[in-house]
Amino acid sequence: MLDVRQLSVSYGDLQALRDVSFHVNPGELVAVVGPNGAGKTTALRAILGLIPAASGEVVFGASRLTDEPSHRRVRQGIALVPEGRRVFPFMSVLENLELAAHATRGGREIPGRLEQVRALFPVLGERRAQLAGSLSGGEQQMLAIGRALMARPRLLMLDEPSLGLAPIVVDRLYGAIRELRDQGLTILLVEQYVYGALELADRAYVLETGRIAREGAGRDLLHDDYIRKTYLVV
Image (cartoon, rainbow, N blue to C red; front, side, top):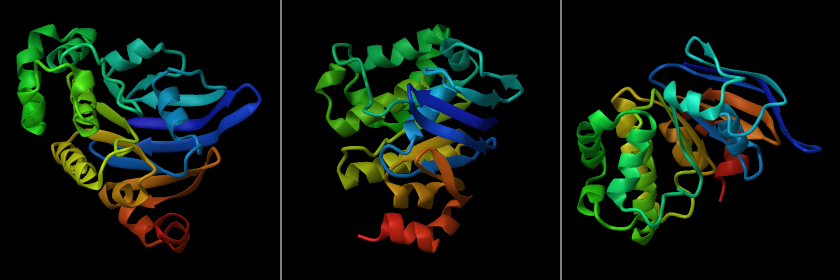
């Protein structure tokens, strides 16, 4: 479904990604893990067209997206849950959700989409009239994921969904992500929470200093000596 080919991205003289290649098959959950500053967020932003690529290609399905603006990529079926959630704090939970459906011209489908989001995150139904900025961090992350799902994506990209959340909340979120994967949604998950991401992923890539350092099945990488020593030893 997604094929990233030799992607390079620079910020001035700083090269954030160097010839990065990876792919995501339909129905897979693929994780990209690595330390802070490795280029993980940059990769997601480049896939969505929020920042320009210096070189390389992004292919989604049969479409070459490299020169497409971000709004067209969204309408082709890519949704991003950004790092830090970035909900609209002075809009209600319901308004945040409805906005995403309207942005993808799905206004007529709002009731059905809302019901799906409420089934995944019942608390959002309970808080529908509450201002998004007054939600807890975990509830805001649920809202950010629900907002992305309102766009009916073919590919859901999650950027550090566990960031700043208590372990019990992370467990709940990962349960929801697992449920979405089991329903057949294709997911690209970027995380510093290496253990949780690798345990959940069908396949994974380890990104370090802008390059792919390791790749393989998620469970296999959990037992890789390098990964265990570098990321999993407390």
